[in-house]
Length: 233
Image (cartoon, rainbow, N blue to C red; front, side):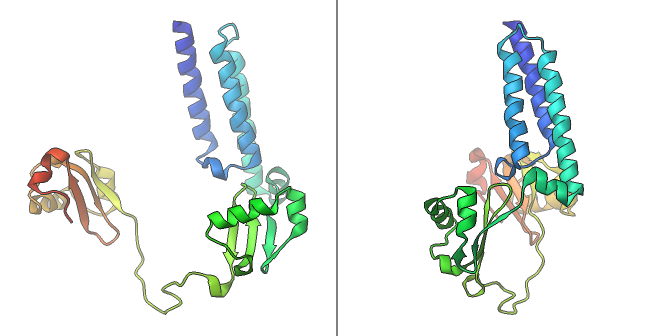
């Protein structure tokens, strides 16, 4: 029992490490070869985890081998467009100028019903409104609407818009986020001053606080302290 527990911990840590080394893509953004590697990793880790008669090294070596293969393929696809097309494939145009490209649907074995469902999910109900629909190598479908059907933007109205940054956390669960302070160009003295304005004596009274893109501080007190001030800006 103890041996199985230890082996599981080792393999779990190894798979997490290898996954981190291979990159941070979301599952929906995985290329075909990355998906294959992910599936094989889980299988290779499961076998020595369940069967203690299988040497642990029999799972570790293949896992590291797959990691090297994945990193090599990623590097090749990054440096060579030709290698990328071989490894990842090429995007396919499903709709062009409001017309469905039948040959591509047949080639990809994608039915009209499936295509229409995907378009409805993306809030496109009329194919004539679509300039291009492209099936990306990750399996996602990108939709480019025709110019008259595109959402209105401030640029279309010639309205000036300021550049926006990122909101940064100041306090999380009563603990000051010093990294957020630095990135937002604020000091600890500024934060303490702002808390004092709102009647907060100790950061531990705050459940969550952050600075938005305009520099305003928003905070939410813990449930036990809400009667003292509640959520404020």
